[in-house]
Amino acid sequence: MALTKFNYNSFDVTSAANTALGFNANANGFATINPGSMTLIKTLTASSDSTIDFKDGTSSVVLDNTYPAYMFKIINMNPATTNAIFEFQGNASGGSGFNETITSSSFRAYHTESDSAAVLTYLVNDDLAQGTDYQHLANGVGNGSDESLCLELFLFNPSSTTFVKHFIARCIFYEDANMPVDHYTAGYFNTTSAIDEISFKMSSGNIDTGTFKLYGIKDS
Image (tube, rainbow, N blue to C red; front, side):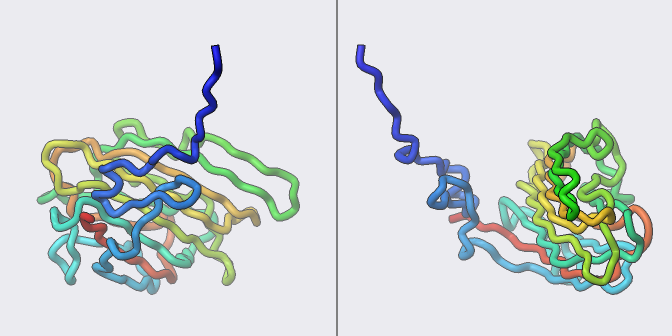
């Protein structure tokens, strides 16, 4: 019997769902966002702030059923306190306190400047199991003048009253121990109520500087 060799490059990895959300497959088959599908909604600039909050209907923020997916971009966030945790939470429509129930998973890779360690590891202390705390996005961010964090966070269909609200986050930051850290987090707000407010903060101290952007990703 002759064996058939599949040409993996011939497979179409772009699903109809991805296309509907403005995602395309690049030459390597990975999902990328069509820049034309992104609409900048709001830019906030941190200046010694305890929190950076995006609230639907406040200060021109849109976080409702206008878009099926939203993306937050954080550019060069620098904290006041070194070795603190950068984190986020949400509020359901009509809620307060930023204490929604989250289940999540988290892992990271890092490589020290001295080349003494290069590690990929799951982060037991950074995930939540039906927890209401702020979700960790980066643990141990440095606050030196040349140290910062950059992040992308996707929130899918936050206005749904049928499904839980999934999120995916990836950030790269200069860790307090002098190493680059690539940190991944994914999970969901375990509520069928709409999520219409998102808050970012440090576990200790203020957010000194940083650019926080909210984009809507429209249908194709």
